[in-house]
Length: 275
Image (tube, rainbow, N blue to C red; front, side):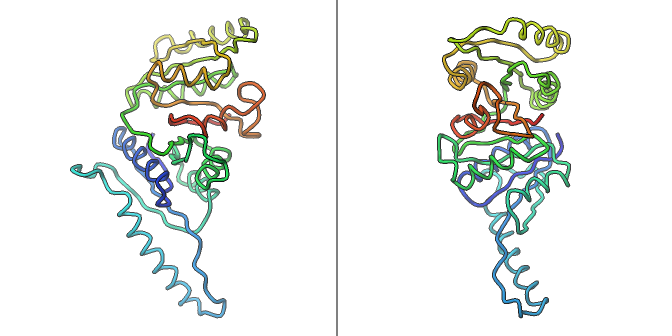
């Protein structure tokens, strides 16, 4: 993992996203691309092109000063992270395009989380980026404290792509010296999928017997509750989930979108992968 993109809009949520991204970049030696997107200033169409450009340049110069002031290293710490700043007009779709153009390995975004309404700006933007980005997106709830990445939980529904995605997670785990825990939640009022689990475990054992990856099956009345309990009991640092790109909020586990629900409710950082 060489390049991490993190959008900053000076909100509390985006500040938490920056510091989480900063610490990950410092730990693994990655470059951090800090992005600020803004609405272009209003100018009369009759203004000469040189005047319009002068107004835009002045605005971007001021924004850069504010951006550097908002993304300083913690007190007493010398900057150990290579940071590149990008300031341009645009929306969350610009973040997706920028990640693709820069071949970013990860996008880190702050989110309101904790059940905040979906129409809140950063909650909505994070969801839209997760939906359209070609690389994994790490959503950081406001207030989440970085204490290192010691363990990553991957929620599986025995999807055919899980083995490949677990491989991607092992690369992150090796870089951060963490453990990957693959977990499946069985609903207590439903059948246990023994046959699907057996097929999955056969492939799992063949591919991960020598890697830092474990498997567990838990039962709960709700998948969300089971995942949160598993993560709390096992002191999970990040919860990773698969989301379907063609219809992001379609079934991930059960009839409703687990990725969307967990993005807005859990107080754990959520790492969303695409198929």
